[in-house]
Image (cartoon, rainbow, N blue to C red; front, side, top):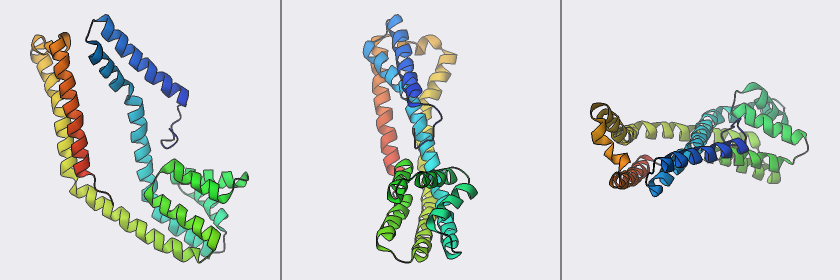
Amino acid sequence: MQRADSPISTRRVTLLVVVLFTAVAALGILRQGNLFFVLVLGAAIACTPILWLLRNANQRRKAFEDKLPETLDYISRALRAGHSLTSALAMIGKEFPAPIGQEFKTVSDEMAFGIPFKNAIGRLADRIRSNDLNFFVISLMIQHETGGNLTELLDGLASTIRERVKLRGKVRTLSSEGRTSAWVLGSMPFVMTAIITVINPRYISVLWSTPQGHTLLLIAGGLMVAGVFVLQRIIRIKV
C-alpha cells in the first residue's frame, strides 16, 4: 500500500478483503454449491483489492524510473551551481511532479525533522523497490561515507540508467506479441462463456450447478493460472 501510495487505510483494505470473501462464501453456501469451489472462488475474488494495489505500485515504480535519469541530471546541475545535496533533494520535491517529486519531498522533510541522511534515503529505496533507484541510493551512501566527486558519479549513473530505460523499451516492444497472446488466450474462456450463456444458458449452467461442473471449473482455473504463469515467464526479460 505504501508503494502504491494508496489513500485507503490498511484497515479498510483488510475489511474489504474479508467482506468480499464472506459475501461470496455465504452466497455459495446458501445456493448449496460445492464447498471447495466456493472457498476457492471467494479467495480469488477477495484478492482483487491486493492485485489492484500491486498494479498501482508497479505503475508508480515505472513512472518513477522514467523520470530518474532527468532527476539525476538535475541534482548534478544543482551541485555544480553550488547547492548542497540536501537542498538539491528539496528542490526536486518542489520542481518535479509525482511520484518522484513527492518521494524526494518526503526524503527532504524527513531529514529536516532530524532523521539521518542514510536512513531517509534508505527508506526511499524501500518505498519504491526499484533496481535503478537502488544504484542511486547505494552510490549516495558510499559517497556520503568515503567522499569523492558526486557530480561525475551522478552523470555516469544517469547515463547508465537512461540506457537501461531505452533497453527496457526495446524489450517491451519485442515482447508485445507474447503479451497480446497472453491477453487473448486468457480472455477467450470468459468471452466464450458469456457467448454461450447468451445463446444457450441451460447448456452452460451445468458448470456451476453440478459437482462435476465445479470440478471442471477448478481444473480449468488451475490450468489457466499455470498457463498465465508460463507466458509471463516467457515474455519477462530482466534488464
